Image (cartoon, rainbow, N blue to C red; front, side, top):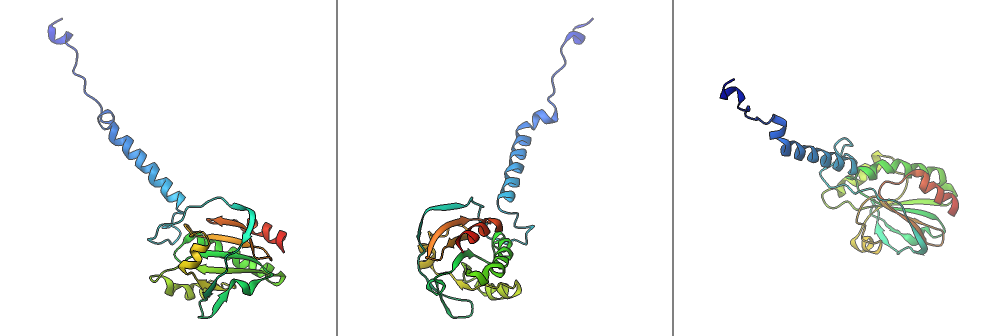
Length: 201
């Protein structure tokens, strides 16, 4: 046996070993991207938009009912709408926008709740936070989707009174005394709303 035969063969790393860091980075990136789409409601598949979507938050009940901040806003037909007009009713005040897929998915539930409980002293007030670039879409959206409750345009003063509205949809349940008894950030199940409505009517 000669020296050439006894000499160890030179080790050659495989493709996977040479590109291990790249593959790990690529995998992590794919997971992060997938998680991003899940959290944001997959706006592209939902007919989405180029605006950031709000995350879904858990319902946050109010420990002690507080007075709902009063407001006077212009509705989509140019008339004023005031919170005091609905004194003695159970209300859902819903902050939303035409470009927000979770908001859009929740609107049929609000329409159904108004249809079911409207004659019993319940009302929904939609407050659109659409800005100049999408504000013109609100009236066509309301009409094409058969929204059966009043819709008004938000003002900075009102959004600040209601906690700043950091994400949408954000909704508040107000009892007959004008007290906020619960608030929700993110898409909320109809059954959750219904439980409060039945308890407060």
